[in-house]
Each structure stands twice: as structure tokens, then as C-alpha cells.
Image (cartoon, rainbow, N blue to C red; front, side, top):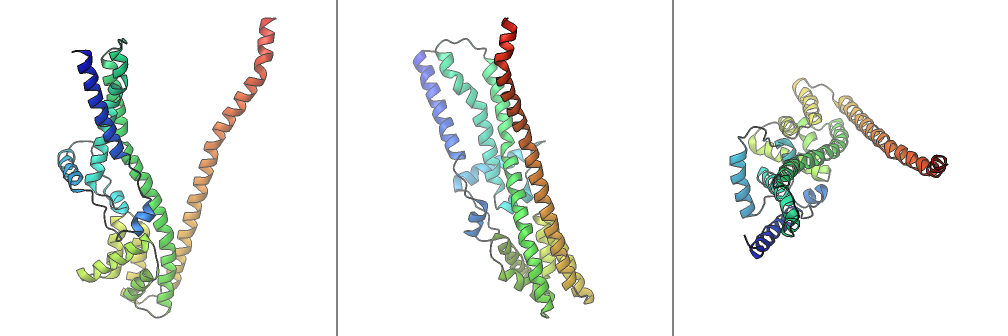
Length: 291
């Protein structure tokens, strides 16, 4: 293989990798802003070609062992499984090719390097990048559930006030959801609109939404309101109590996260202190050794 052909092949591979990285590294809009400007619960469908490629990859990878889709997290974030799989495959291919492309100029200049080295490095990097979208979706979904839980705490108080005003269970749930703003209340409004179409109770729709998005607090609200509908029990105190307990849980979780972050910050501080002491003691140690 001549040098010119090798250079052209390297340029072609490098250009393809650059285009691939540019496509997958587009800045993503924030979750709250994206959901405010799209219908509640609507998934951001990719372009036609991306959707077709993602569907093709999904059909062939879904049955492989070790390949699982975070369905609840994707549903909460409004992302499609097709785009999720497409991003995973694109990152894995980029990691697989990146070491070979990076070392190609060195090899063309005559640098000695065993062939298995870039192959092994590419496999390791590709395997690592394969799991990056899973971690990103998991972190975004965790933050979205925290935001949803804060919205539900306010929603519980609104439902309790509506029930105290002699509103029926269904009216209390729907009117309280209509008062709020934001993507979380938009999801509640959509669930109640779907309940009216499907001819099911509002608390059943609330329970189904909680199961779909892995939000147990919504199932608790549904159980409380269902009890009021079945036996006419007074639920004002129960709803307010659940709202207080939810706020307490959220505050405790935030305090625990803050403590964990503080503990993680102590290690770099201790390491910096040790380095400073070593720098201070280094001249004296050198003087003692040289004498």
C-alpha cells in the first residue's frame, strides 16, 4: 500500500469520524425548557433517516443478551428508544475507530507500534462509550423525578384544598392539575385527558402514570383519593400529611447529597495539604541528604 493511498484512507476515516462526532455532540436543550416548549409527554421524534436507522438497530440489538433499554427513564424524559440506541451505537463506533485514527499519522511516519495495540484500545474505548448514554439518561431521569416530586408536593396541597372546598375526587384531581404550570403538571393534565377518553377514573390514570414513570408518590395520591371515593373518608388531613412527609423526604435527600458532596471535597483538600507540606519539606530533606 503506497503512502498516498494510506494518507487518503486516513483522511477518509478521520473525516467520517469527525462528522460522526459532530452529529452526536450537538448541544442538547435543557429538560425543563424542552418540555415547556413541547406538548406534555410528547417524545421528540428524530428525523426520518435517523428514525429509520434507529429502528433498524433496535430490531437487531433488542434481543441480544446484555442489551436493555431504560424504558421508564426514556418515557419520563420524552426520548425515543430509536434515538437512544442510535446514540449508543454511534458512540461505540467512534470509540472503536478513534485510537486507530489517532495513531495513523504516527504509523505513516514509520513509528513502530504493534497492530493489536490500537485494536485493543479501540475495543476498550468503544465498550466504555457504549454505556455513556445509559449513565446520562439515568442521571437526567433522577433529576427529573426529583423535580416531579417537588411538583407533586405542591399538587397534594392543591388537591387537599379542592377537597376541603367540597369538590369531588375527580374534580379535585383535575382542577388542581389545571392550576399548576410546568412540565410535571402538564403530564398530570395529559393523564387526566387520556382518562376521559379511555373512560377510566382519574385516580386510576394517576396510578398508571406513577407506574409508567416509576413515581410511587403518584400511586400514593391515587390510593388516598380512591379511598375517599369508595367510603367517603375525609382525606384533607391525609393529603396534607402526605405532602409534609414528601417535603421532609426531599429535604433529607438533599441534605444527604450535600453531605456526600462535602465528603468528596475533603479528599482533594487533604491531598493538596499533603502536597504543600511535601513542597515545604523538600528543600530541608534535600539539604539533609546532601550533607
